[in-house]
Length: 138
Image (tube, rainbow, N blue to C red; front, side, top):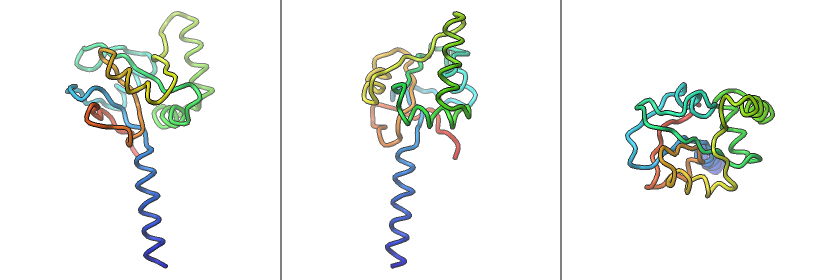
């Protein structure tokens, strides 16, 4: 009984880790980003990577639980606050939000297609075409 409980606990921890968002770029990138750099890119403060290369942030669909989880962990803001933030910035002309996608699969296609494409995906989606450039702290 105890072994089964331990195995279930290990499995649930493994599944939770695989669902955690990680920030990715094309596999060929040499970038590694800090929390501050990722925040600045996804919150529209900068559209360049620390190397000076352009950055094109790509967002999950607007109603995605992964999107909500990512921004909560990144900047401690819920979806309503993030949407209001982007409405204010977009309306004022100060910045434009990350490229919006229709599906999780489209996020990866856009990362591979866009020069400087950077996005967050579930760790389980990372394959040889992608490189993790930032992991959110636990």
